[in-house]
Image (cartoon, rainbow, N blue to C red; front, side, top):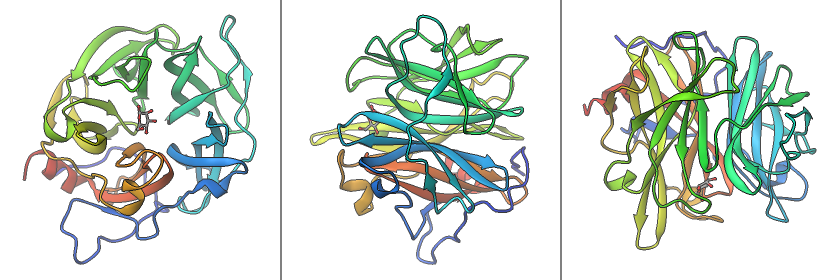
Length: 324
Ligand code: BMA
């Protein structure tokens, strides 16, 4: 019997599976839940990360402004569906010497470890993409840490606890452009500053993930392994198509893949996933879960334009990964 290892989250956003749907994952009927009007002067809000916070939820949102610069804003919600975003861009009260002031960030993830929320995002270092790292305890004051890796890298995703005494981060070595390749690696750190012991986790696959893959939400701990949702990209004759699937990683050595789903879980099929600034993109960056019921709510960017949410049950996702 598969079980999520974690706390109860009674107020997890949830909607039952529609009667006519037999898929392991289903979309919220009110999608999209966040659109560009949540922030002044904004072009699009997508690929964003949320966590339980106080008696509701908090998040870091990717808001591209009308100069088309990628910015990060905080947001707060009581129910995980209706969000109040902060009009001001996140700024860091401290930053390491030699790092240029933060001016651009995208595809954030937020990971609670002990009483801190660690934010990772795709940062610009001297104009090259790499993984930025910051932390906050209240979503008001943020400190910036060292970038985790050398350029070029994207999709830096932390595990929600130390493994064998060390922090662990998934990432995807990239290029300076739209990256027509990419596999998922992991790295260890004792202090969130120096990263090493780099290991391959998963290579790109075939079909829906034949071009590149990248970790999505913070992995979910279960009694059978870490449940990892990840995006996969197909290179079609009309450009990239971003879908997402899932895999199970070993609890003690997450570079070992126990099992990996062959089919995608969610692919761009709704209008808001197919039509937008970049058509055909479903890009998950966060998941909430309620351990006792096995409910999972996944937040994902849709067509690089808006943010959506979809739901699944842990046991059904594991059945899907096992090919049942
Ligand atoms: C990737 C990232 C994402 C984006 C996706 C599709 O390389 O930049 O932010 O959603 O491309 O455009």
